[in-house]
Length: 374
Image (tube, rainbow, N blue to C red; front, side, top):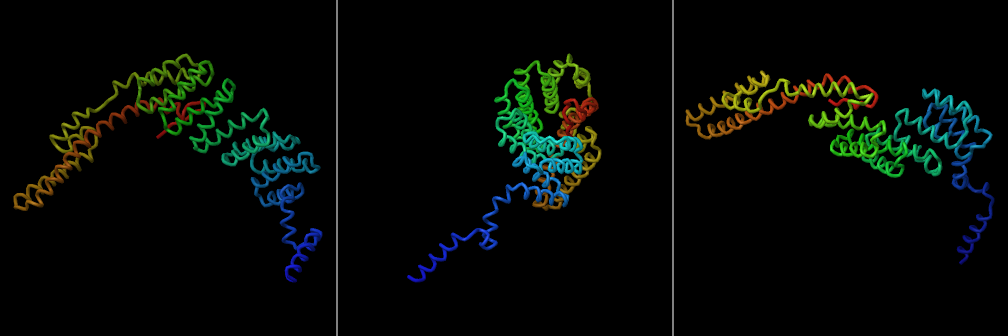
């Protein structure tokens, strides 16, 4: 009973003691929330990171300071520090913007997200765009921030997430520039993800919904390019023909159409003849398709296997002879199949080589031309 009374008395005494008389561990715990939001502490922490050349982390702290304390007397100094951070990071335009004293909180957050995007830090930029949207849900720049978030996913090769967000933006902002661009980018993500059938579907829908938009020609060009990758040359020619009146795509379209018209005259090998020659004499089919080393190897290997089978049976080694005969027959069949495959490969390479010179001329250029693929 006495022990219980003493414990209760001790607790009551501790509860009325001033906070500064408590042990340091308790005081530190009680003041943790103050440290996280106090202007002086945030600035001091940002300055410490800046002096240690942790530019990205210091800029995050300075941005937090400006958001929580936009009217603080130290705000101009923090803006100056942000300009210094941007200058050290190589972003001269951001340094100029900071040095002009732009203390607008929304622009500060969005500008930092754009800076990260331009520097290629796409996943960090997503966090900053989402931070901007969360704190400024009614801001006019929210559609652009959401669109940039989808672009970050696209540039980071997370095509499924990008497509989902692009489609939602296309529905919510239908008729606005953000929505139109998002509808087009959905097809781009499918193409980059090599889901060509879905990419063609998205491009077709975009052209139907926005036939007069400048991106409609780009969508049509990308459809033609996709058909070329699928070796559907008839459909590719059809799309290219519709671009002959386009100011941007007129010349490349005409050159690709001319190259497609020459495809029937490109040198090719008959798979039937290659298979028949291989059946008559192992290696002859490979020689027909231009694979001389494979032809010699196939001829010598089949000859040795046949000779080995004959010798085994001649010496009454029937088990060894049966095994060698089975292996010889299998290799002989593979020789025929290889010759036929070689003919198809020769024809495919011949077509690709015929188109490559024209396609490569435009593949790696700007102006919306798709990137080349090996």
